[in-house]
Figure (tube, rainbow, N blue to C red):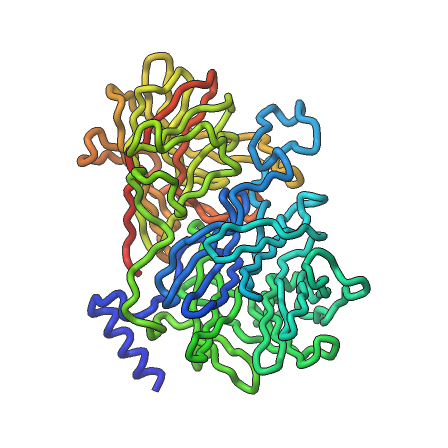
Length: 540
């Protein structure tokens, strides 16, 4: 039966009817640590975006196939100047609690719930001290506006859970839980406990907890880093009918997929018709951590993910047909009054240093402080890159740049391939370089940026098109290639052939992004105008 279904689905896929099936990865982009809920006929998903602002994106879908960003839980985090990239002094001259950045820190693993007619979100920044205190936000609708409801102690990779009678709980860390007060502003004294103890074959953390209740049974799902012979990363599930009783354990997913490693961490969600789906992420190198969709089969009361062979399927029947296409990465001509929800800034933006109104139809990026490099530059604007291949280009007006200004387009990450226009006196020079940032482990302070100049071209005009192509197909090396144009039609390749984009959990902990930037190295006051960002990707 399954083989006949697979043959049918593959036939549809080969026929060119791309919307006839759901193809994995469901979202071939950096969307880690998902939580997914359904309210009525709409699914809502939140993900981790760490140092990017606005943060904690909320995405919506009617069919588990077409997703669109509909809001963010917060515009900025303001617990520390680290969120502002304010410190650009050499490390040995820096003093104070705000020293450093929040690269790879910030918002992690947000939990999303709907209760008593309101949306609730719980998140804890991956920081020490007060910066890491847990936020609980609430909103009348998923699109917002979201407001801070309370701050609590740090709960690592936590999930908020409302029991049938409305009692709130937090499940977090490796098998820890506690009850919250009814107003969600405190922890019930004496309620903190371990509901399971880690077993010998699970030497790493069990984290990324998500909790549901189904048919009177509680299910806690966690990612397990298991290192024994024949063991791999997997999703485990603990269940009980009594929160104070004994919990049973089972492995509900242990599957590689698509030529990449084993995957886990996510949740399960039901449809209006009572079917269930599992959404889990998979590490895929330079593009980041992508989302996969699997059917859920309830076997002996366990939510088993995958097909009948316990594997993530390549294709699935669509849950609901006829829905309009939607995307989380988009082109933009910057003609709207507000910046599109598909964009995020690197750290908190300087609000008065960018504009969509000063020159309608253009994004104006102004220099606002003198900085030594791209990694300390304010107002770098980003979007995700996507697999299997994608391409994005910008058109930029350079006529108002000042001496020492640097503007351009980057494959932005801890290791970045960068197209930079540098204003050198009265000259404009386009450079393709490879840049690598070094950060301290504790403060995430920028200590060094290695820059390898690969190719340089002097420009004789103030208008330039810059293009970046990404290839994330298996065995293609997560390759980026760079181009420029003087007329928007004829493209010239520049710099490194197949620059390798990398994922590094010790620094950025994110997939590579398109990054549009403009910063000053000598004096502020210059600006560039970006006419458009034009994006395309291939189908899977």
